[in-house]
Length: 264
Image 1 (cartoon, rainbow, N blue to C red):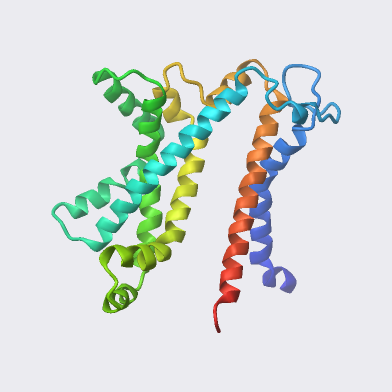
Image 2 (tube, rainbow, N blue to C red):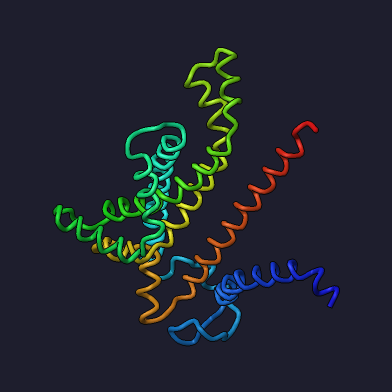
């Protein structure tokens, strides 16, 4: 019991980590399966056929490329707008600042299906044809709140004396922002950008309402599940999981290297 009490936090952390990673491990294992029927739900035999031809299913790689393109542009749009809004909310005082501060986080609290239906009604009333651009507008809108939250937290923790010191050394406003402010805020901006990319890439509810005839990768997966689940879907899921893990590890290595390089 003493050992259990001493290591309870570690055990709980490892259990939570295993609970989170287990579905990804199942997806990885079944990416090497060779199912006998249409559904890839029971293990049959080991095979590399799906990995050799990940685009063997019609339209799957096309929908994947579309989702990646949407996620990239949504990340750029949400990051630029979210960073500007975060700096404005922290650094400036203006009328209705409190209301704006509350409304900007509304998409985080609102159920996705409510936002999806509202956006659909807006696009239809404005006569906008549903497709790539309506999906992009919707993705930027609901990713914006997450970027603002991440960047705002970082800006609030910044020491204003660093910028004052730069101005005392005759740095202009632009030079101060580029050489001092932006590097300090970069971790928050990067966190918001990565979160936006992930949210946009795997969104289904908002995309389904506002896509028209456009098919993204999550919609392709949902449609495929109705008539059979190709092994290639597990291949793409495994590849995305591995890439995400590598990005996190690379970020940790860079952070540790910078920390060790700082003078003690």
